[in-house]
Image 1 (cartoon, one colour):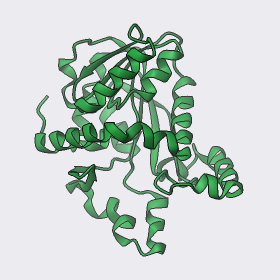
Image 2 (tube, helix red, strand yellow):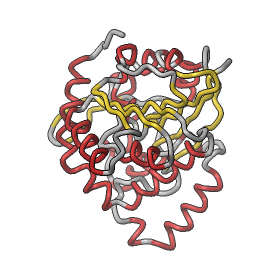
Image 3 (spheres, rainbow, N blue to C red):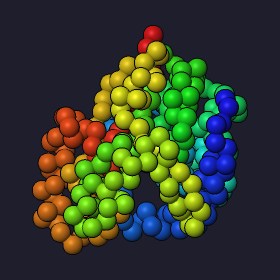
Length: 274
């Protein structure tokens, strides 16, 4: 597969390699990230067959790979960031999971070159790694040969509109409030650990369109639509009553319109036809 913007991909890889040194510490201290991971994992487990063979894209330091391995699944955890892969391998070895988790330095824009090509029972990508490409349609269309008939695809993606992000307007933060709308197809500037790159925002309808030939959508839910996103740190600790109320509302409405597609993220799942 041809990468239309290899410089952006290289920059993103560099940024997240540097972040690997502090990623787990930040993750461990943010209770809203714990909430997000629990939501995503529950979504996947509700549809995943026991003992599944999972291909994980942008696996990061392996928090989800290790979780699914402990649940009895086998995970081939891929990432383009060398620092993330190194940290992932350390954690897998320390927890004696080398028989359950394999690793590969591989971009999701080059899945045809995977060392292990399945067929997989599930392709999984968490927390918007796929938003780091302007060629998401090409990436999604590369999934079909890798997934068995009836297999699952679950992706967590940043949509073009976020209710909470837009609400930053009321705090005078106009740049954040409108960045998803302003930058559109040009890609919004992002930076991690001092490295600058771009990310793009995609609607559920775009993902459905890209996968329509081989996959059928089975589930869509908003994530951090009503509860605040993780960058509003310590909200859960400082406002426990409000958190519980907001979380209850999100749990009730997460699969209904418009809440299913206007969160900080959405979780979308498909089954392969045939």
